[in-house]
Length: 59
Image (cartoon, rainbow, N blue to C red; front, side, top):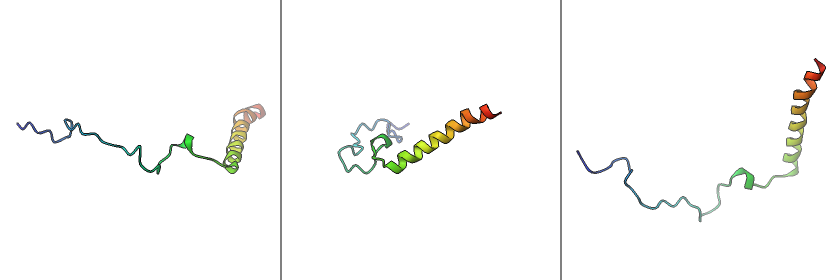
């Protein structure tokens, strides 16, 4: 049996995941958004509220 680990479990080198590099990937809460996206969100909200509350009141 070999003492060499082929799966890399004993590999303790420092892996830099690019935190100091170019900000190519940004998570959604940090991204800017425009008024068109706000308007789209409000329209979706209103349609959802109509479906959830309006339809049962009509039945």
